[in-house]
Image (cartoon, rainbow, N blue to C red; front, side, top):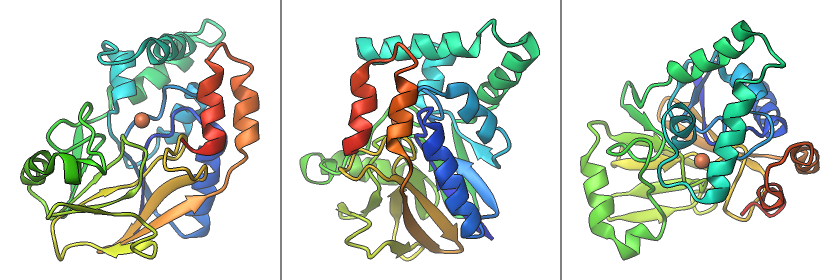
Length: 250
Ligand SMILES: [Fe+2]
């Protein structure tokens, strides 16, 4: 059984389509999404539609903001939340068509446990809000230690920072490059960040996700037509910088 764990699509449809094609070519059986399907990007409706049949859909902070209140969002992000909400309630579509999208949001869970894997958007102890940053290993190791104590399994999968890699007890962080693109889980307690499909922030604009098969986790990077996403941004009132950051992957 091959499971693709993806996160932070951020309404970037060309990126999502490229990842699903890559998954298909790799024989992926199931998709687990760790949240932030929407927010920032130009095609929230289309992305929710594509994700509705995934085996697992977790709640991200951007879905939480649309469903409840945009807590901790800067003015630009808040404006993007409002625009996204309008798209999902658009009168260009029927009540039923909109209802399907809201059902996908309503059904999202905070966390999911699959065998020895614990899944959350941000961190296991604060699923939608807390960030586990690479620099926390050196600047706030106590925080990382207590996050490690907060989940019952040997391995957790998260997204939210848009930077892929593996945190291990110590604490220390290893990038996919340092791991030659894969890691075997189960030997030591680990938190795997799967990176972001639609808005990578590690200087590499390609989409990031992982394929899990048993204890093996493979980090994948997938090229997608970034210029096409930028073009689609320009059909919306969303701020230009949200489009331009995709070109540099920042
Ligand atoms: Fe995100």
